[in-house]
Amino acid sequence: MSGARSAMELSPFGRLFPSERAPGADKPTGRIVDMHVHFDEKNPGFLDDLLKLANRMNLTACLLTPFAHRRVVTEAAKQHPRHIVPFGFVALDAPDVVPQVDDLNSLGCWVFSDR
Image (cartoon, rainbow, N blue to C red; front, side):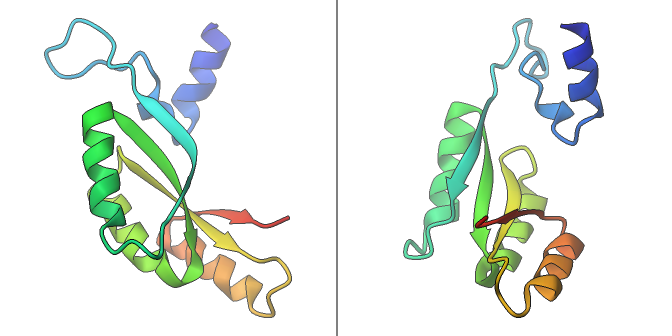
């Protein structure tokens, strides 16, 4: 398992490794990482609700975000990096896919496609 741990320490997600300890705690924190959470465009309180849940459950959400909402999600991720990992969603057949990927990358998003 030491090889896996070393890979995790090198990963951008290394700080989320389940054996991390909360300050002053003598037990691992047991962080949950949800790799597939969709941003809910129809719920104006979605990010607030997600952050409340993330705090309560010690959760990190990889948040699949439509391009139109990239800025609000990346700003939330900057303010709450232990709870939100921004994944920008692009359609590979969109005529402006390359500028979209460039923009998402400049904002610090991982990029996810529909194919």
